[in-house]
Length: 173
Image 1: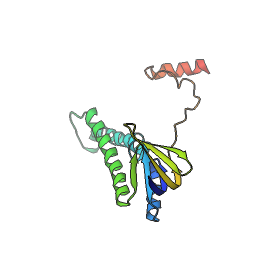
Image 2: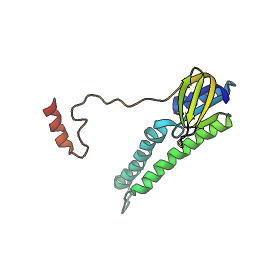
Image 3: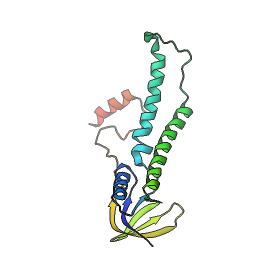
Image 4: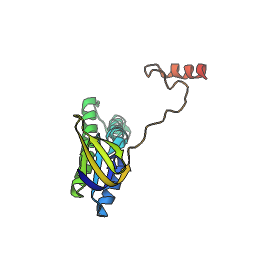
């Protein structure tokens, strides 16, 4: 059974930064993550959204460039290419974090972490195999879950027209 001075459960921004700092301070460190390094923001939230917004902005500038003397004909959007680029950006950044782990000699344990006892963590891989580890310290950095505010109509299907959602929200209030 491997022993670490610190096991961090979660490789999002808080977890990976804590692990890198601990390793820099000389602690034998491991990070447990069930998905991609970088967490929700990097892989499914902020970064992918910004990649799509950037591409949309380029499209808009090309369409509206005539006022600045730039004429673009047949400007279009290729959604599969936009989404491929979005995934490429996230994958590159996630791989960069994994590279930082490697250079800092941080063990990157892919699987779901479960604290089984004080100072004990079980990591279960996607295939169901489990390995137990011990640690002097365990840091839980599993992120958060988005809150759904009590807005009337928020639970209605997204396929309804916006004007209908507005009318229904007044009916429910």
